[in-house]
Length: 79
Image (cartoon, rainbow, N blue to C red; front, side, top):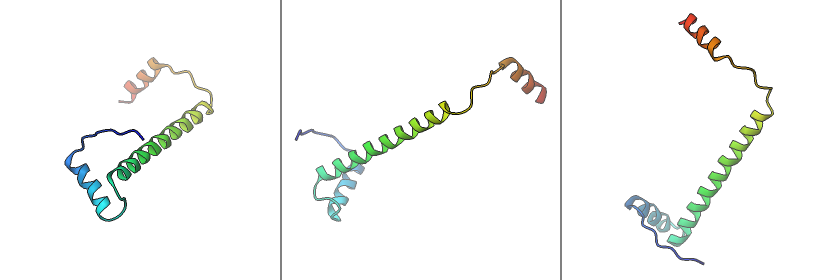
C-alpha cells in the first residue's frame, strides 16, 4: 500500500477524530478511504446521470430549425 502525507484543515481533523471516537471507524486511514470511495461513487453516479441525459437528448425528436431573427422580432413585439 502506498503512503501519502496530506494536510487537513481543523474542521476535517475534527470530523475524522469524532468518527473514530464514536467507533464508526478505527483509524484515520479508514475514514479517509471511506470518504474517497464515497466521492468516487458520487462522481460515477453523476457521470452516469449525465450520460443518460445525453442519450435521452440524442434519442428525442429531430431538432427544429431555429430562426434567431424571427425569435428576436417576436420578443420585441411582445415586450
